[in-house]
Image (cartoon, rainbow, N blue to C red; front, side, top):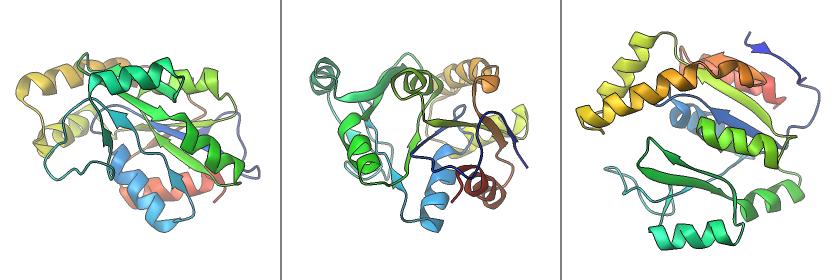
Length: 193
């Protein structure tokens, strides 16, 4: 069972933050969790990065240009936002999260460490879960194996991952993503689903 501090499974979790280093499998785990619990609302981020092969605008992300992102920031339209790996910006649109919470639904935010820290300030009742890799070697294998970044991009992401891994104790719970089914089971328990 994952180590948990400060939250029990008998309370209704309105907003759950799932964070962790690059290539730890956040997207895979959240997708599996949402298939098992389709009542969850999975927040879709906006980003200034171009789509990866197979990604579609409005499905995996909302892909926007820099001026559009600037407008969202200026209008306080993002619950959190950050520049990731010193290259592109990502953010969580505020309105869909607030609407889902008002309707009594649980919202899952799959975001990076910077975003999780902002949500801790802007939405302190959110429950924060850090996904950790089984080992550093496995994290490197997953990053290289997905084949979506150049060697230079991989190196930059791995430097960031070292910093992110050192921040795991900031979270309410840490779950080692050894297997997707086991990780999803742990999240179901932690979120009281």
